[in-house]
Image (cartoon, rainbow, N blue to C red; front, side, top):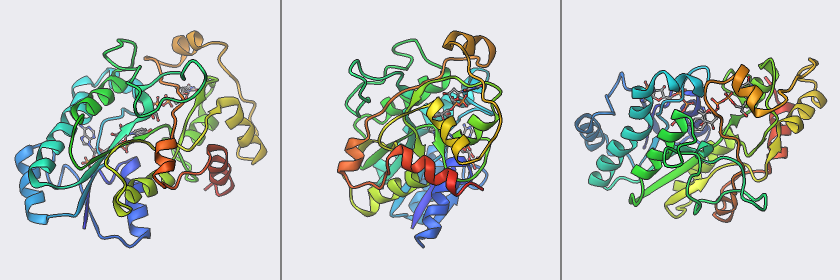
Length: 287
Ligand SMILES: NC(=O)C1=CN([C@@H]2O[C@H](COP(=O)(O)OP(=O)(O)OC[C@H]3O[C@@H](n4cnc5c(N)ncnc54)[C@H](OP(=O)(O)O)[C@@H]3O)[C@@H](O)[C@H]2O)C=CC1
Ligand SMILES: Cc1cn([C@H]2C[C@H](O)[C@@H](COP(=O)(O)OP(=O)(O)O[C@H]3O[C@@H](C)C(=O)[C@@H](O)[C@H]3O)O2)c(=O)[nH]c1=O
């Protein structure tokens, strides 16, 4: 049996959907069921239920976007940096293998040659660089807290999208924002991300950090072209002239726009299709 923390959230729901499709037994745990932020409560619960694997899809993202984290710093720090340490302690104590949903938003840009950051590259959008949003800083801290963890996967998700229209879906955001920032990004198809997380465990992939982004990167303009070609919107898309203008008019804190290298995940046999294909498929099946 799998235990899924935060399984009713945006990411957790996608993982839950995949586990159900695969007919894998799982139990979703909310803080209202078990206060999993408490070491004692989590230890007691896991000691009793003895799952074969734990997935941590809990964390603090801010609504409607990461700007909100600038005003809810204590919750953000708790959910993204303190909680992973609590789960690590308990899982290591019980010798329970587990995986943690991290974010690719701990990087900005690309390497000088244009290639993506690998798992070996230290985060460059973090409190250590003093250049990040509060959200990204706490996600990078969460990874530091897990440094050297045994029997632990760290899965980096980045700007999720899928075929389901939702305020959290990148495609929906691109359709609905008044103006767009033209940026180059690696993205994660949420369904493929969920499948890749579960495959890590079922296929006994080596523990460690994985960039679970669809191979490649796309510009906002390329995504908008696809949206138009697939007939998802006929609006006239408008773009900010510069990142400075975006920051002045639409954002409270800098965004991580970045390219990640997912070749470690691909070499491990994880199911991630090229980003253009994944976007086209999501838009073709749009609901
Ligand atoms: N959405 C995105 O764009 C991305 C998300 N991620 C990461 O994925 C994880 C899940 O995000 P997402 O599903 O979008 O978030 P949601 O807000 O939709 O769900 C997160 C869940 O986490 C639980 N939780 C535990 N501690 C806290 C806390 N201190 N504050 C708020 N919620 C808490 C809640 O579940 P309950 O109360 O039921 O226990 C909540 O439903 C996070 O770690 C996030 O950083 C990474 C990249 C992109
Ligand atoms: C607010 C805004 C953003 N954007 C762009 C900036 C960026 O490239 C992209 C996403 O920005 P948002 O502000 O919507 O989303 P943001 O909250 O930054 O999204 C992030 O959420 C957290 C939880 C993560 O971990 C990330 O992987 C990512 O999904 O949209 C616009 O084009 N126009 C806008 O008005």
